[in-house]
Length: 247
Image (cartoon, rainbow, N blue to C red):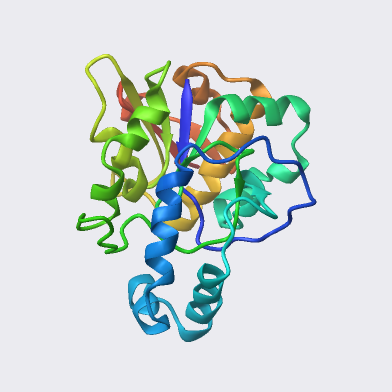
C-alpha cells in the first residue's frame, strides 16, 4: 500500500536536524521549473502565487538564490502545514520513519513526487498555479502521468490522503489493476457528510501517524482510526471511499 499526501505552502530549512537519504526522483524537471521561475519578475511571481507582498518577496528571493543539491532538509520535516503538525514526524521513532519512507509519497507542484527523506529546499509553487512551462499550459500538463507512474510503481494500491488539487494527478492516470481509496473526514449535517478544510487536514496528518504507529499494510487497516473524535462509518463508505465521522 502507498499513501499520498499534499505538501504545505509554509516551509522551513533545517539541514542539520535529520539526514536526508537522497534527492527527489524528478530533480531534472524541478531544475527546469526553478529556471522558469527565476526569470519571472517579482510582480509576475506574486500574481502566479496569489499572495501578499511579504510572501512574494521572500519566495522570489528563494528562487533567485536557490540551490537544489545543497543545505537540504528531509521533505517530511520541511513542510509546516497543519497536516504536518498533527503528523508530528519530528518525534517519530526509527520504525515509524522506516514505515513512512516505505509507504508515504508527498505530491508537489515543484518536485512532482517526494519520499519523506528526500532532500528539499523551501519553495512556493502550488499544483494549480498557471505556470506555462516547456510549452504546457499548467503544471498538470507539465507533470502529465509521471507522478502517477512514480507512485504506483510496484504497487498500485493507493490510500488517498491528499486534497483534490493533488490527488487528481494520480487518480486521472490509474490503470484497471490499480486500487484507489480516498479517506473522507467529515461531520454529518442534515444527513449529509460535510468536510471542513482545517479539520480534514488535521485528520489526514493523524491518519499518517496512526498507520505509522500501527504498521498498516492495506487500506482496510485505516478503518481502525479513532483519533480526534473520528470513527469509521461503514454504512456511509464504499470500496473507493472510507468515511470517518467526527462524533
